Image 1 (cartoon, rainbow, N blue to C red):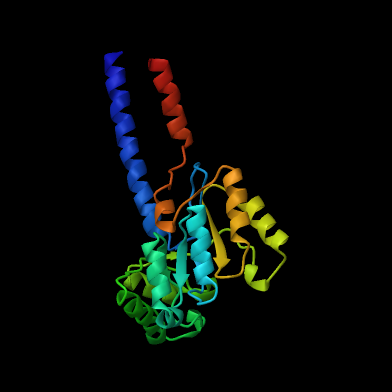
Image 2: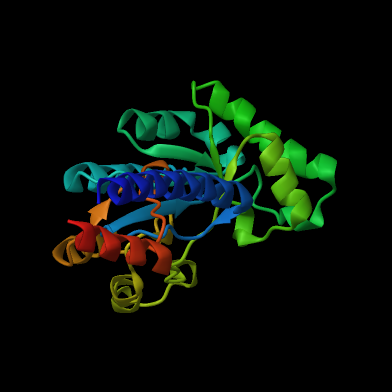
Length: 241
């Protein structure tokens, strides 16, 4: 019996190591993150296209009142005009990520033009002591060349799993309903600066038991799903005990 226990323990350790390695390989192979597999009720709100001098201050005020941190995918050309707003967002604890410079489709650019979009934005953010690690291509449009350029900058490319299409200016009720009914554990919500009923979205998701995290925090919740083999080993463990 002791021998069987030792054998079982060694097998579990070996398989745990394999699972950990497999997780790492999976994350390396995934070039675009849209959602994180997790059983925890966590959700990441992301805000695109800022900063805007009219709407971003209101956004930051609401987020501070609600004690929620978001990930802001900012446009370089807008940061150039209002770096103080991005600096304030970072100071408030929000995650700052790059959305390129002009919001023009990177898929229609040459490799050099695409690189310039990322380089210019990073240079502007560097002036306010921010180094982005996350990237969202404008319009969510990408190809191998865009992903390759993001990799050169050591960026993780992030899209979304919930899109209320707030930029089309639907009714407040429709935006809130879309987000509230489609969010799942590990969801990434796409929102745009100044285009959404944020307080209601936050209140509704909290009422449903969700906790708000940034994208970088969300990535820490990645879970390796239990396989049939692990279920079998757990059953054997019960028998041995």
